[in-house]
Length: 527
Image 1: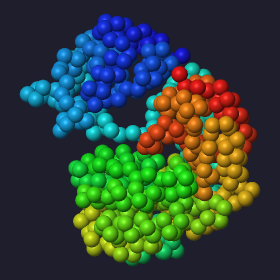
Image 2: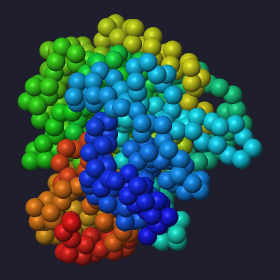
Image 3: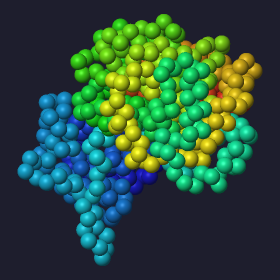
Image 4: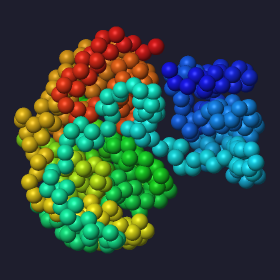
């Protein structure tokens, strides 16, 4: 069980406020916040402790301080926000985020509570920015937090939630490690903000082999992983209210970065019945006058889909017809299986502005080195001002990790050990097949066979298992079987009927995990 002291304080606060759990959920909704029924039930029962931002929301709704509720101070303290009248939520027509609209118009934007310690000045509490209110990253979210808490109590958790090769015995090629070690003395200073010449030259040559048109050295940027470059691009491109098309399911960083940049993510559907390929009609339907760009994730995370040329051609035609920029996340392009060919969409769009992302984290099993890149190609004239913004932001962060840049040339030019992993008999290939077969053998579970990457995105029969809340399902699986997965909603998938499994662990571990999953679903029915 989680910290029972928090559970007792929460129950006490509910009683003092004369509120039931349903009242708490309703009060949160009035502020434009979401508290799930099962989520609150977990808090009250003491099965889990909320994140800091949720703790602050609960305290504000109950009229106590977050410090008291979390056990950091001994006596309850009234929260100022509890006395503030609620404004209209965004859904009800309020023009500002819920946090701002909850304050009187004449009041300064002061925090909800104050915190004091003996002998010190009473300080206001610093709340997170309201820009984060609609940001989701459940790959490392509430369920992962609960897993960390359980680990702190000495419990062993099988982490099938994140594509991190190193903990599962995948090693970086020796040549790459040796080259970095050799070059470390020369990597103590900043590089050019775009990256080392040798790294960018190797990336340019790789892009040319992939058929990307109009590629030059000044259009190549290295980053601390692709993640940093996605954030940089969204900030450089999007103004408040600009729309950007993003797949559902997505890798949630895309939606989060677009939201933080002030843009409006619009999710188009990938069709499970069509091997998770994008639904072209749905894309077309969701283009508006405010749409600025389209994102594709190919090979796809979380589904493992690889898009065929005809689908890519149709996406290019939509982008051409509506004058959209194309962002293509291709970090898994060297992890295709079953003879499937990966095609870079930029190679089909020489007349369109394209940004293609890739890196070494997955193909060379060096996620911790943090080295990714992006390549600008196609019509660069129409994105000259965007490039000016990219350069400004690149200069502001000075440069990416220089030691990691130093091995790009070696990694892209040498023996590609990943080919052995994804060929028949290789670890990734065989583990993919095993997990796919075992999942489909479970009554109530179906899964499309991934063509690339490390992930499978199975579907649950929600009627059979009575699943209405996929976060509750993920917590139940964690508590009962000590298996950590990422729920489908964490990838901006609308229904509570999917989850993602990482199939990187060795076969004996996966065998035990699949046995546990089969036993779990044989008895599971969500309450």
